[in-house]
Image (cartoon, rainbow, N blue to C red; front, side, top):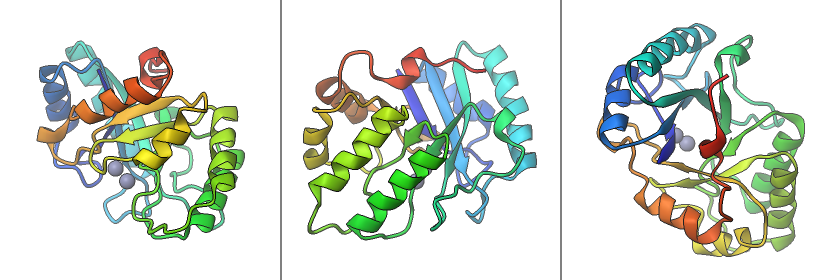
Length: 218
Ligand SMILES: [Zn+2]
Ligand SMILES: [Zn+2]
């Protein structure tokens, strides 16, 4: 089982890498991804924090029979760039993008389409969270999913927010999208909470499309 959305004390989570690793083993995870917030978040990552965290992850990987990926949950700036500290890519195994401000349907989709065209991104976190969409434009959803398939951006099934919603999952069925399962744990006790996500992944997505299964650290 895989949980690719865990926050540590390197941003706003409460657990050390060691504590998270121990809990993940206890919950029988095979692969976890630590994705702390980027620098625009008040407790977010800096280049130095990413390096230090990377060393701690290496130590934990040696100690436990667990694959731990070093990641970031990057915010998107209005111009479509990402808040990732400079010179830190060597210490990041993967990049998750999450939008944390309310945007209307069109703004949200157009911004993400630009992001995935311009940047190397692995996962879109909690699609649509915080958005108050009354009217949805199917064409924009299709454009977004096509870009995601083209650029191998996986859609996250997020246990904390229970998204994507039913409507979106119905559309997902028609695309060869990859997916990831994520608890969005901020507490150590939440690490590996992916029961719903796992079930949704197996129900709505093609066999073998869970990205984490084929992932290894660099
Ligand atoms: Zn988030
Ligand atoms: Zn998160």
